[in-house]
Image 1 (spheres, helix red, strand yellow):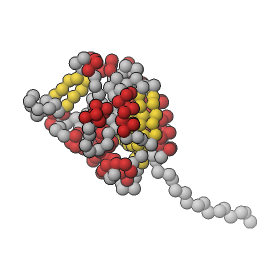
Image 2 (cartoon, rainbow, N blue to C red):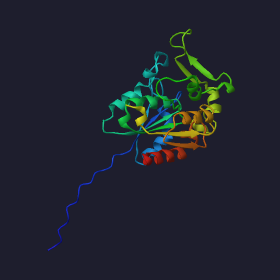
Image 3 (cartoon, rainbow, N blue to C red):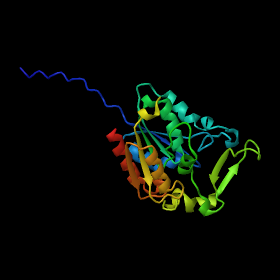
Image 4 (cartoon, rainbow, N blue to C red):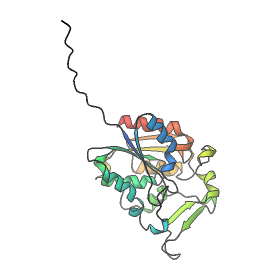
Length: 244
């Protein structure tokens, strides 16, 4: 008689790691196309969010009068995730503010929050120095900001972007020419950028010192490491995902 084959034990397939990538001011989901390609080729699940009026979102920026409105696409996306799912939430530049709001609302759904050259300020009241640490000061480059006043010229601006003629010099100076619930329950990682003209290294250091993350890394990059240090950033994100 032949041998009786043993019955195979059922196996549980590990959950696919899910990265959620959030852009900064003036960006969009398109910023992440190189990182997304590397991640998906490595079998990670990736979602890139367009915040209100950014990327392919057709909303008029002048119709958005609060940060809650601007950040609603991320909040809606997080709300739609199953309660049992945890994501690795990554935010670039001002996208760090979006991360902090999301971690305050969806702590159980976030494995780790990663700030990439991001504005990493605690939710709630901010001192004048906190704002100075987190808000870009581009005055050394001259009149570079273009504002729109959706509420009227006598009211604060409703949107801001660096003028196109300055973007290469300030934001992408090292990038290839063609790429132009309780918040403290969520572990945070900060990825600094050493040649940043937007959120300068000293500002990054100040935010790190005031609200220390679990881990800190630095890239030899401009403000846009998804273009100028693509493989290094990808490697760090994979390393972080394994650490948490």
